[in-house]
Each structure stands twice: as C-alpha cells, then as structure tokens.
Amino acid sequence: MEINTIQKKNWNAFVIAKNGSFLQSFEWGELQKKLGNKVFYLKEGNTFVLVIKHKLPFGFWNYLYIPYNSVIQGPSLRKLAKQEKAIFVRVEPYQNIDILKFKNIKISPTRLQPQKTLILDLKPEEQEILQNFPKATRYSIRTSEKKGVTVEFKDEYTPEFYKLLLQTADKSKFKPHAEEHYKRFFDVASTDFKVKMCLANYQNKVVAASIMIMFGNRATYLHATSDKSLSSLQAPTFLIWEQIKLAKSTGCQEFDLWGIDEKKWPGVTSFKKSFGGKEFKYPQTIDIVYKKFWYLLYKMIKKIK
Picture 1 (cartoon, rainbow, N blue to C red):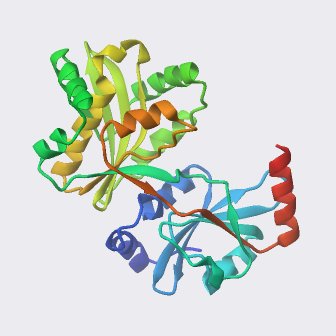
Picture 2 (picture 1 turned 180 degrees about the horizontal axis):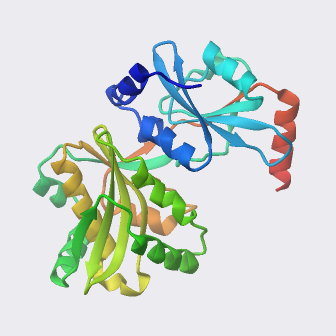
C-alpha cells in the first residue's frame, strides 16, 4: 500500500509529536525496503502505523510485524492481513494496551526488539549529567582522555566499524548482520532521521565504534563494537560520553542506551548501567491471530526448534 505525498510529509511529524520510536519513522520503513522486506504505511483512523512483512520458514505463509506501536486492531490492518495471507500480526507495543477488549489475541514470548532499556535524561546541564555518573565511569572517561583517545563523528559509513565488529563477534560468539545491513542506515538518513558513525581513535586506529540514531527528541546508541585487547583505554565509555554531549547539543532530551538484559547480556547490561539512566520496560509482545490452525502449527515448530 503506497502512501501519498501529503502522508509522506506528515508521517514523521505525527510520530515525533507522539514521542514515538524511530522504529515507526518513515525512514525505518525505507531501510526495511532496502533490506528486502515488504513494507506498508497504514493510516488507521487518526494514526499512522508502519507494518513490515516477515516470511515464515514453512510454506508460503508469513506474518506482519508492527514495531513499537500500540495500534493493534482496525479495518485497515485486518484488510492488509487478509491481502498478504498473514497468519498473524505481531505487535511490540510502545505503551500498555487493554488486550481484554480484543479477540484472537495471544501473548508471545518472542521479541525482535529489546523489551528493556535505559533512558538517560539529557535536560540537565552537561556537567550535572557527568556528575551523576558513578565515580568509576567518570574515572574511565578521564583515563581515556589522558591516554589520547579522540572521538569523531561522520555522516557516512566507515568500513572500520565492520572490521572491528567481526573481531568482537568472533570473541563473543555472536553473529552480526551482513555489512550491508549497517551501510543501509546511512542511505536513508535525513533531517528527521539523523545517523552518525561514532569513532574512537587511538594512534590512528579505530578502537571503538558505534552507530547512533537521532530521531525526535531521542538519541539511540544502536550498534556498537570495540577492540577488547585495548580495554585499558576505556574507549567505549569515552565514546558514549561524547555521543551524549553531541546528542544534547543538537537538541535531544533523551539518550537511549538500547537494550539491556541481565540474563542474556550480563556484560553489556552492566556496562550500560554504569551510565545510570532510568530503566524502562516495554509491554509484552502481542500476536493477533488470523489463521488459528497455521498459528498453532507455527508455535509447535518453534518449540521443536
């Protein structure tokens, strides 16, 4: 379903006015298209809803996915689900929903986006933000500065990011996206959806890197990596501090450290908590089921796998 010129112009304005996530931005939809996904820009009543089509591993069935939006029912969504032969629509709500008002709703343990995060308030003065960090974090920032680590921000993709990410993935035993995934962020950047490549350098070498998105009043620390062999430089901590300063200087009021989980990612979670911030938990994932038999089959296959 294509949206018209007026809707394109107003899409981000609507999402930003609602303090919505960058995952509902017009650019996020364009990014998904570039990554090979089919995307729908729906107008459900007075609300804009970005919907992404995901294929399932069996047959020709699929499901529709709504990231960080609390709209779960409506004629446009039902029509789209029928049109695309979707078994279900998966919603990761941005706010609490009274699911008792709706039929065919299932709570799902499966998530594509993090359920918990840390939000740092950027409204205080820069020095106050720094002073609110734990003593160890402030020490790490000073250490990095004294050892000569410098930070630069770029508006274009830098290959050093992926080279470092592959090293981190190998040591930490996780599988990163293909490099194309990270490059595409910069292809869809705009005045509303700012993308920054953040690099910490030491002796002409990139020792830590991250991708930051600034959308509305929030900056998000999205993908990050660092050289573990040079951990004594404390470059990742210094890099985040410089990102916070940049985000604040450009008008952002919040800094999202993006994704914590003490069980799944204990090390990363501990690191992010070293900046303080308020812990926020999004509501549970909801599946709106349209084809009950195939949904049950899908759930059975998931259990076997």
